[in-house]
Length: 176
Image (cartoon, rainbow, N blue to C red; front, side, top):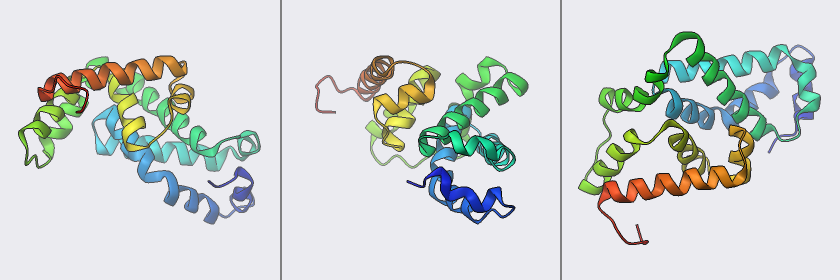
């Protein structure tokens, strides 16, 4: 994990180090933003804004303890800023549905289709935790810090989401 001090080159006018940070974390940030927004274009806008702000506010780099957590928290903040500024709350709830309709994933097994449909119906708070836990492999403690809630709240949202996905897939056992 890059140390914020690795970004000294960007503070001095170049951005090679910032490019390395983007190469390392950009895809995950885009996936996270897309899971929240449901729009690839809006996700790109959010992540771009995070990096623009990072490049402009170099003084903040000295205060970053964990760059990965900082980037995901900043992405989350930018996503919600986008939602407040350009979208109504319904767009957040319907975003994943529209995204999947635009480019539906291949589902060779009926259970996969059921899980995807169940994911679409999850509350945004649960989709967010699933995206961070499953796709980014963050701990509940890390997720809690990103979403501004306790580790236990993050874990609870994950458990509730998994249970709903199991029900959607028609699996009643714990071995889903």
